[in-house]
Image (cartoon, rainbow, N blue to C red; front, side):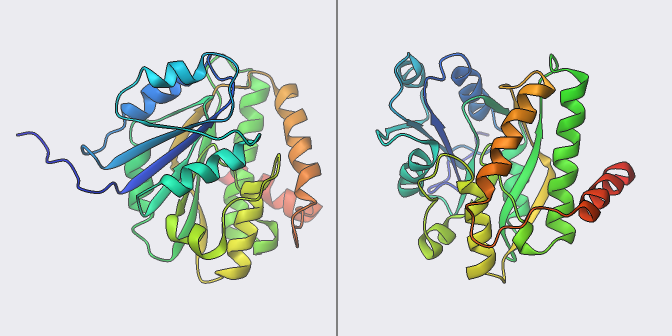
Length: 254
């Protein structure tokens, strides 16, 4: 017997893209292959003034909503998607990522806990990535888990390539800032200040593959940019040397 389509989606997925012709189709295909009931997930793609064939590629797929945002930057594009989203939970990934088949189900199960406001998932790199990059990736995830479990809200970070948020939070505390980087971490910090009753959690079963990077040096340069831009977030604190040692032992014991 065929499943009855949901009258309203339970999860809205937002993907901004700009000149992403090389990776966008794979991203969309992974979202359309999610293990979800008909109508349970709505997929919203936002073209951020692409100059290549990205919009045409997105337009070939049925079952998605294609929007356009001319203001440069992924955060304005995500905010456009947020305004159109209909579900009580909004998830984000990027056009150079593919999601695991059970991604939506894991998000919705985690969000069944009313005390959780924001969930960060596990980001891995493709099989062709160097061993050094895979080690960097494991360190990043250990750091995210450590911060979520053991650190004060001032240390919170976030990343929109694998993140889910209660939609009502955007109505309550506002959208992402119109920044080039770190808008996701700023939102996590703002949630901590304005809704301290809601938790940020790391969920290792919520998995995506990030196809942009294949080498550790590429990733290290990007991480340094994040470190530099995090300084603009009100109240943000980098981990101390003692806390970084704690991440290392947390990683080894995982």
